[in-house]
Image 1 (tube, rainbow, N blue to C red):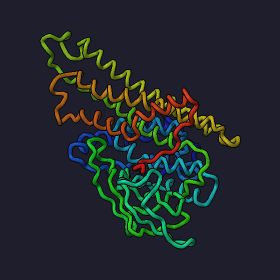
Image 2 (image 1 turned 90 degrees about the horizontal axis):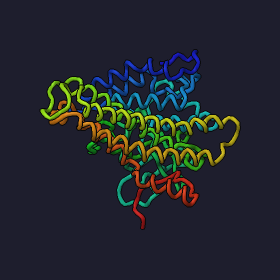
Image 3 (image 1 turned 135 degrees about the vertical axis):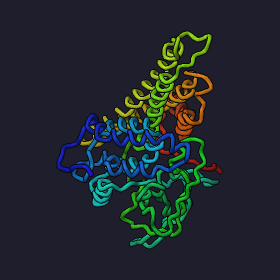
Length: 402
């Protein structure tokens, strides 16, 4: 665990501390992909190293890292294996939410748990024909508790690896995040995610059958003040995509350097000496640079909100600016990374599609990440904001309109 007697660490120190863990994760990424080995070891190593507590203040057992440092580290981790930042997306989101809470016993309790190494998963989304904004997952029981949680969730990213699961439930007209142990009686976690990318994120089904809930471990959505959490969650995807782009460059360079065979109508004695191949690799690097720089430019708006918070209420315009910036970044980053992941195969011939190289995972993972929140709606939100001064879409849900 992190030494709580030290001051908050900065990115260079944190990157050096976690580099051996990231390198270990990267070394096993292709094998995990090929054999569909779930990343239990990787998650455990990250928690043991204190990575899951990197944003937690030092006094609670964490590293006290800034939000910018967190996202830089998530890009690093995404380069090693893009499954990992997404596995921990709900965990870091829950942590960030608690950091924004007013002082309370619940806030202290959860920051300390995370500082001690607890990992939090997610069970929010329901599939089927429910109406947008309404849930079938119900919180029931007497006001004094205990309450009970019953329902079924899908896209429960990371929950298979988690100690605790944040379940979005409904009690009357109120929605709240209820925290339950992953191994509690009545919790069933099913690894039935069948997406062609991000295969190891365990984004499958979570079933809850009368699971006991402590009312003190429910965080009501209606009690949250202004926050940047939707922007935060989108930025985790963008950091992960930026990591994918870096991995594309890394694997493209390694592939070209390791080849001797050239085409008879090529322009160099080796692939690395061919100006056309050099041009492709240069474009890959430019796309990766664009993705990461754009992501961090959007993160800067979150950093500015954190800077303003101690002085009092943050102006609403600051949240609007952050949300629109993240939407614009999403449009740019998704396009850049998908282009790079496709262009990678122009560095060579048929050998680029060898299953042993698993280069296809970069495009599959990027494509899967980029449709979690469809880009077309980001484009519309930005356009509506500019043309009509419409407020950003801070809260959205999926369902069937009657």
